[in-house]
Image 1 (cartoon, rainbow, N blue to C red):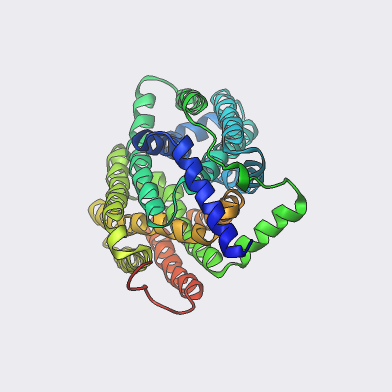
Image 2 (image 1 turned 90 degrees about the vertical axis):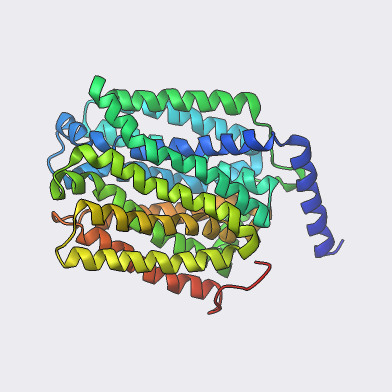
Length: 419
């Protein structure tokens, strides 16, 4: 059998499996969004509680509290590389359910943490469990869809998923009005349990039997090498990593910015919600236009907007004329363009790697999350009572991302049609 014939047979098998096993479209998108929302909740819900967590656990400095976020992100990023091979060997469903169970247990452990060390261990464990949701959500979508239809599904998933950052800080703030910060982690435990039951009862296995891969070091290393040596995969993964560095720099610094720069911590949930809402609107727009304009044209144009508003924000901050309103408007515009970039960069990175989707998604996710978290932590640690470090981070990472995209495309600009 020729390579083309084998590839066509495999694609047909995946399509047939999707028809036989897929949930209804709306329910499928909702479940994928819920899986991804478990991650967003674990990052954003406790942002208003960081001062209380730091005081309760004896974290000495304000910047030191950022480890509550970064410990989770490092666990989330590093564990993804292990879930991919397991999912390619044993199927998506059992690996996903195991990761969700760990997420639930670690959330409960964080709720009862009595020391900084216990909290860091619980947060890393929570991230390790949540990593399964990221890897498996992308791989499951790739099992059932490809090309622009995959981009559409990912964009619709992101719309629901991005509603969580809009609401999460407000949820955390609401909890703090009536209960200690530990109840935020209790809510995460309950949410994780609900998603576990939903997936266990409704989600079928989506990996076609023909695409199962043996769990061997040679195969795993070969799939990792393929993912990291494919120019398109690596280039867009690096671009995503840089953009994520800006995002995590914002998340790490955001509570301190509202408390220390603007002296308006009460406005933090509302402004954060507005900024996150712009990301959700961008994903909705992307779902509508990507089929007509193509992933490259949309995402490359969005990268230009990301750099433009990041640089404008940096100029305003450096000029010393930053207000809470300039911050909200410029940050919302920057994150709007981030919302147009993210789904398309991820889809293009995955597009050449359908037969190793689980491992490829894991490797790409690990690289973008671990190094994005470290870049964002480095930005957050530069917080000096102003918005300058955060704004410069966005602008600088955007410029570097242009180089990664140009390298991935061998110097070409947006492709006019069909891509």
